[in-house]
Image (cartoon, rainbow, N blue to C red; front, top):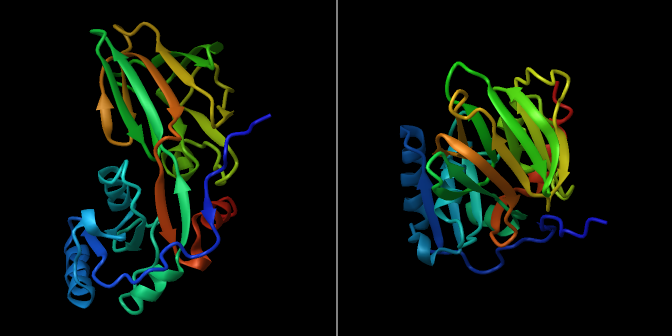
Length: 272
């Protein structure tokens, strides 16, 4: 029986205290986002992140991802407002009544994936991924991978362009583009999805318990070099990649009550 706790979905507002002077604003490197930040700082002041009760990220999903990585380990709630082209993790941009929106926001607590790699020299590296860990071929040659789950070989040989292990929050990103399944929050599942599988051609991936440890072993690595990427941290020429959910690290995202992350993930599965 899976007893792994589900992601925390707060049904009551998380920020009840006075937020005056306790909001830190960060913006993507675009004129639109920078101008929005200037206007909001003029209205509400701009607290430094280390003294803020909440971070307001202005941009698209890329800005949200960068902000989350900068705050990893501190778990300051982040409220995004869309000033970019893709805003799945963002709320609508409105300057009016921001304090009320923050106080009424619903929270989703997420956990990243921890990637541990061993490269051709034997060097070991670790990185955290909020969206996904990807293995990608480095040359024209397809990658050849062996996949183990909890120490047991589940796929002795996969010839492909790569493979993805995604978080539920990241299941709507690269994983979905690779025809992987969308995973609702609270499902205690991690999607494992091949990228352009050549052999076995009919293998479409797997849904794994969230406490599973996935290991990729790179076969014929000299002929078929592979890189591993945790969000945007890349390690090249890997030989072995271990992936697991790290429940010791938490991230809190804030959403307007009628646009919660859980609802968005469900609604995305009915988009046509």
